[in-house]
Length: 390
Image 1: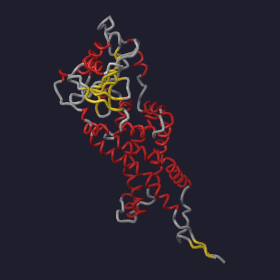
Image 2 (image 1 turned 180 degrees about the vertical axis):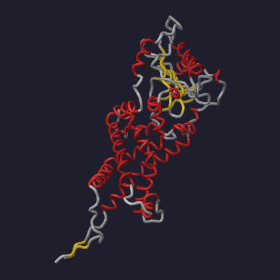
Image 3 (image 1 turned 90 degrees about the vertical axis):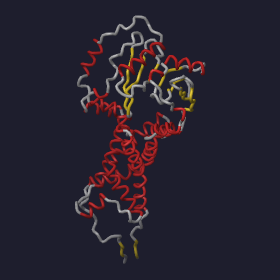
Image 4 (image 1 turned 30 degrees about the vertical axis):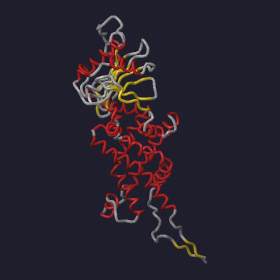
């Protein structure tokens, strides 16, 4: 004769739906499968939130004493100064970062060149493979290379997005009373480690879910072209596509100059035009890229503020601003605004330092969820099984 000693006298939960069981099973195994990916992306994302602030606080070659805007040297002068110092390097473009920042000169090299905007002297030659670049490679590709790593992080993010939804379903109390409210909304700090860990996963995960969904969804928009196109369409994009095409076809050409201008003189003209006539904000931060081929356009970037920027294209022959250039973001339709603000929404720059702090904490919590979730699973796995007496 044998007796079986059960862990509990409670009858089995026969009322648990098939959907709840499947959801719990998927949450467990998808969480285990994607946990390491989510952890790495969360930690590296947390580090990258304040990349620019940390760099400018620790890198003296990035900062200069601000002077009047009229004293800033144009691209042609910067080109001559860098060419004299580094005669064997081809220069591709100029990144003006503001009156109190050095200019980053894009050259054919693995190093980054920084130049004083007022005298053209090189303030620093820095290896491109710095700490933050390594963190960025981990965040984007898990250090596996672009081809493999981008697929792993994309699908890992997609799984995490669905884990957040399935986790919300698991969190939702079956009954609303004082006990379930306390267990669902409050952390029992004086509890044992297993209970505290469960609360850190369950309760903290709930409070962070909106931010975590936003971070993961904006990451998915950068990973999956089909999702970006679908979101653009759903948010009202393409409604005026025909009108835009007609505008491009019928756009009149500016007759500024009939002869081809020298590239450096043209770069100076575009740089001055952008900062004095086109830019709406952060006017002294302008990127100018030199065209490589006769048919290429001049590229300029302006209105760089809080993770958002404005791409401009100028005809190389006439220096006309081309119709495919972007509008000032406040003048865009919602669909265009959403697409152009996606990066800013992903990194938390949209609201400045307050949202960056929020994203720092949110990314840290996202990284913790696979850890606390794994400990919950491991604790249940190691739990003593029912004993059998003969």
